[in-house]
Image (cartoon, rainbow over all chains, first blue to last red):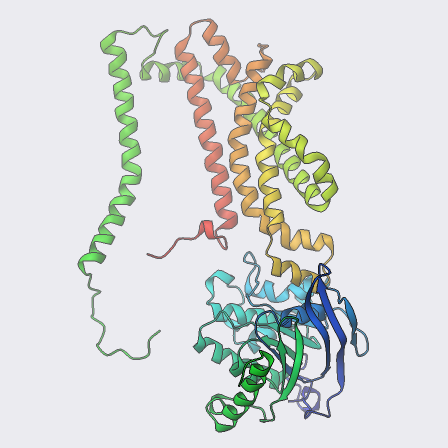
Length: 276
Length: 287
């Protein structure tokens, strides 16, 4: 999928250029070093979290409510300052290194789909004409090329989420953060978006940190699952999902998938202090 | 959306009793919405006319509707001139209220300390009746027009300030986070996030302010009192009442009421045009 290796000029030159290397051989991207967050000086939301993120990783933060997974995401996003530890980006962090997808689509209702996807560029002072290609390409990657001039209210929940994803990847960020993006969708739509997200990742080779409380979703999507526990929020263990990509609907019903789910599920039970 | 259709769709759509009733009700509502108020209008005018004729009420006490219209036509030159004066003050006051209201709202939003310092005084200005402030204003302000404008502004700016402030403060939290992540400047956040979010609230305030600036202009004219050339509708009413010219009072009143309705309708139309593409208030719901 490496765009730069193609002999013929590909229309995807801007976004599709990062081949995903196998686990263990990936270059480092950023690191959380013993990061902790205490609110009001009393509530420990996150304690001593260490995590190395490598280029091409699809990491899920899996855990019950209150395990600090959303806090960790906000810390990585720079929306909140760590009380302890530090977050280090390999080569420093620049504007446009991050794309974010929230639990809600979080679109501006007064702007068209294309204008919503254009937002990250607009905030960096770029004109629409300069980046029209990137916006159109991001929309085509999420299958919404025909809806560029639609308003968010005209779209279904799943389509709004696709716009949100297009906006997150339009700047070709080094890291995309996703905070339970599909939790509010129905199961059919969620499965479809999970599959499409993986296909997207194969094409553009993005690095993703994905917060979820679903064992099944985390196993389907990720190659690394960070299992977390609550009160105080902390990392319990890491589960590696070795099943090769691309994963599709066949994988979802395979024995291998079920076995990985069982491992992750047991880890989650240990995290919650219950017998597996 | 269904892929399988067990029975072929009928050539003509059929309506069950419930759907037929719903359609019929909708049709009746569409017609009644216009016919009923028109009917009430006709009944009231005829009733008013009969009341005057049957009781032989003299026109300087209560003129008949015909007499009011007659006076409106007869005095049109003078009343229309007065209407233009009142309208000018009203629209200028509305414009200044928009600038002042939105300007203060943005200032309060950008600076917490400015809001803490001045918001209480904005409230005090609003809750003090303008009729009690107006005589003072006319003592200190030489220009009659400036005095009238100031009175009308005091009445009209607050709804715009209050609503716009609410709108600026109620932006979606996730969108705010997103703007922060993308490193948006204060100005970008205001321009691309807060002002568009506040637009529906601002337009709601504007519709109220439109009516209030007319009221403010009229009240100020009553207080200002002095007549002659360049007098508005309120002064014409006052003047006519001294002369027991009830038909002219009614004619001027009619003009004021119509002006108020036109201002409201115009602002409602503006609001609809600006919001129709995206805001919930402008959407038609299905079923």
